[in-house]
Image (cartoon, rainbow, N blue to C red; front, side, top):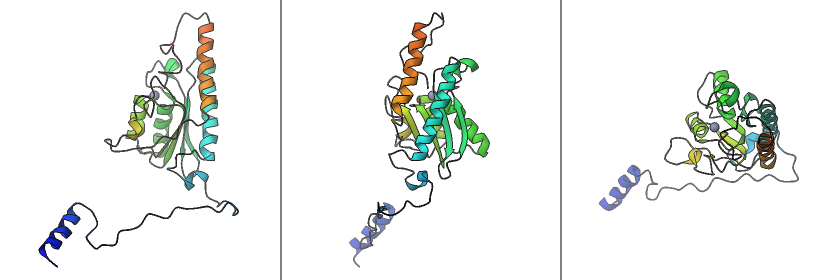
Length: 223
Ligand SMILES: [Zn+2]
């Protein structure tokens, strides 16, 4: 072996690249399910935890989050609901609806309350093996918590063109400069989620109540 080859070997090691002549592993085989075979008996969420499509579990959880959003609207809150569940088992750890008005708290967004509660339940600030499901695209504050809690999966419904920090305005949850990334699965039951917000703001405009929400241009600024 010549000196040049040896330098290449050392350089290759330092740059973490493959050693010259080393066997380079090929791409990992893609799992292909035979459509004629019955589905394997594993939780749907466990089949493709990082895929861009929602699982059946995600959709079921979004339906629950929409129900929570409806409950928020019934007490005059901007209708946003959220669920945190354990990805592998589908077990709900926490759920919440927006409580900004009743708590007089700018941080009382549905997904933030649910993440706090999930951490309390698990005695851990990390939610790596959890999925956060929320009816509206998270704001910068909540997206920041999603990154800090190392949330494994994020699923949301309606996009928020005025405050969304996962795709619409910025991509805070998927920024390579940060130490944790989660690719959001967006648009899940989005029309239903957005319709709740639209009808809520429309009813506010029709009402004679003197107080107007700060987010008078729906659906922004509410999560
Ligand atoms: Zn928020």
